[in-house]
Length: 307
Ligand SMILES: [Zn+2]
Image: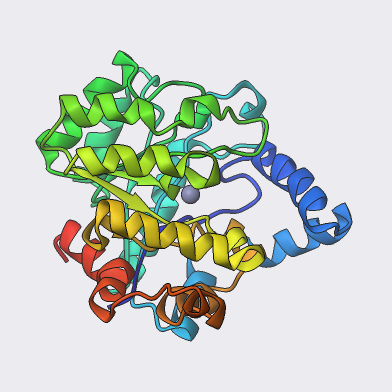
């Protein structure tokens, strides 16, 4: 089964206009396209219902997806043009309710919200969410004591916690997203399943792999690596090979981080990138066993979420 462990329902105000402004500025620099062209393409990828995502999944042969809101509501630059965080959760829950056989959702609340733990309980109890996402790019460290009641509650509820790792477009903060800060959490909550989203990206993937190698409760997701897979494939396959060698295929999860990454690669092409690595990888002696590919592409996610 193909299972995309990392996607979002996003529109102009979710997660917030400040994100799309930063994302656009970066895309202009990276792709050489005009700002106007990038903004037009954003309108094609925004999808607050999940219907577009499901069409892409059908085309790619992906059976299931985990979708989640992103809580940047406490970042000063996100004060305007950002949808209320509970409203974002309702949107995700509605999509799951329409497609219970295809979608599951995680909750995402900034642990600095005074009612964060109560919100998490409600998202799990009332909306049926099956995990928690923590997004330190909002400006807190994952090992800050302010986040500990959230981990405690997630452990009590028996749900996994995904923590964003890797640099983010501005005006978000990157230093909080270094994987090393999650090591404390893994040590203090050995029974909590923790997913390092994006495996630290190109900045910190070695740190992410190093931490996962000593924390059996830590998983890595490889969403967000489409840019390198497309532009520098040999580097990408070499790193993926090293991740599998260091951590084991059993704790690596495939995901897309859609819709933003759809600008770089379709869901179908991203599936194929892992299931059928290109000649350049084989030329350098890099290949993945069928069992490893099956584990990464969905079996691990299904096991982790008890589906
Ligand atoms: Zn994401």
